[in-house]
Image (cartoon, rainbow, N blue to C red; front, side):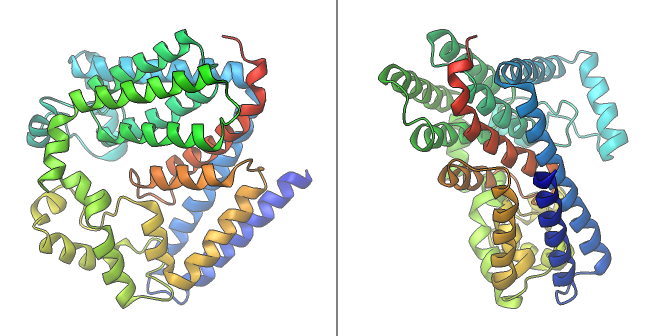
Length: 360
């Protein structure tokens, strides 16, 4: 109960801080309130999700996550094969997201050679984000045995073939971070297995994502531009206008003109506007700084630290590294997707102590 009270009081203090900040920021109170409620709800969702994982135990978590990984891959494959799964997915998107986009468009043909699955999400990249989190939990709860390495490699191969997203490369960074910061006590055989897995993932990614890498190198890739290429310019322009306190949480419409100008400068206006990304910034750490400015963002980062500290963090370097790596995939700082990922990393850093109990 003390544990829950500490968490509740820390999150409540964060909520009040964010709301008070909105009074001095140019954002509307309505936008700030809605985004603040979403942020707090997402943090609670991540926290209780962590508690559920711990209550289930690593063996059961492994089985659940393996089932979810197979479900995502199988469901996405069935959607690409034009089975009734595709119609159900499109109907769900229309009713829930108001979108009837299909996976087959000009960009998908150029970069991927075919359609990409949505599988009950609003865009194909979301499937990759979910898969990254699930894959890393499977990785952390798998003893370093040959059969588990083969299983992980098989899952990754099918994810590249079916999901077709460069975001899956984040898995490489996360595995490297895990091995460096968390798994230091692994035997040499475990290290060799991990190095082999990383090497094969890089090799497979090079084969299946060659066209996408060429597009990034030539500066024609819109997704790369939104996630990485435009960030420094947007950050500088926004902080030049709102340096100390930012635009306020939920202030996307305020940033729209700045983001649009940057897109124009880089010749990306057509793709960004038609894709509904006029105010889109796909990096939640950058979004946080833009929302709160140089002064308040420092306070917010500290409050996040206090909230996460309650759940006990064995290795802060691994958590910070993982949060940074994943930030290039996602701009929704207030969404449950981000906070479920963050608390998944917390769980992954905890699970090392249970390795001796694992025997699949």
